[in-house]
Length: 433
Image (cartoon, rainbow, N blue to C red; front, top):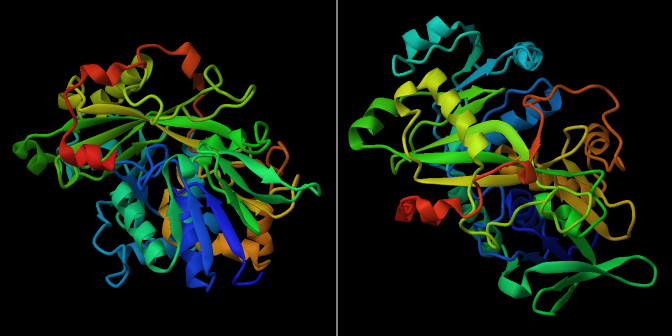
């Protein structure tokens, strides 16, 4: 690839921004990012209060990448310095997920990664007395080296670094891509936006997450799913009480984060949902845009699941009102791998997306792998894992850490316009969400 060729990236989330940054670092001088919204984009999965940063995986490939990324998150000289909060991560499994947890533990031990050990529920409550729920039947692994970062802030920092290196961001209707453009040889030559403006490029990269089926034929490859979250505002006394708790991740039920610097505590339901009922692409589950539906929140059925999860760990918070609720849309593939590969049905068109609700932690490094793919330098292992499978499932069975059966937005209730009834979010939360 010529360093002077024009490159167009569609989507300014974690994968798209990391790709832009690493292209610029490698000397590419004509890189543009198109997104409907300014950074942090309303519809990006990375636009969130916080995300887990860890390296625990059954698959050694992702574990090694996790370690690589964590070195940057923790580096005192990185532009991301100061964002990582090393609270540790408590992973819990039940019948459906104990295999994943056992294999992740064994992989970590075999590769000498981290301070990872098994804890009983009684051990957990002795170590963190703030956890007072019953936790019956939990099988727990503790990793003291994991933690969290304020993901929206991190995305903004990387976007600014990319811009400082010469990357151009185009937003609003001029950046809102409605379709890709092709010549008569089926070569992708650019993208058309909502304003009617056409952006032409030598290379086009699609990184638009759960909206990918709106631009390419991906309904058999990508499944848009949402993890539903709520936010609680703590009092100063409660911030002091909960600030030393770890991230608590029951893989079959939910995740609770320690409070952030503004006293906001995020809780996620690990029962993801799909959106086939309201999709604009027949047969595909895609994002339910926050830009188009700014007051929509989470379904009542998912709220009940979250409150049940809280009763199992922090029962005194289980009936608290929410500051806000949010559906966080990303996309999965059948084989649970990312897609960083050429798109097989067109020339000069590439894919870099499908983060599957765990891709954000790799933001500091994932763009380096995308550029390696573009330059033909990606390892055989990564290229095979991240290749376009044309709807095929995994060649070998992979373990899903969240195997709960999906429910569709069309089957669920109470989510439409529900955030109008909540207290106005704090200024800090509005800035992040």
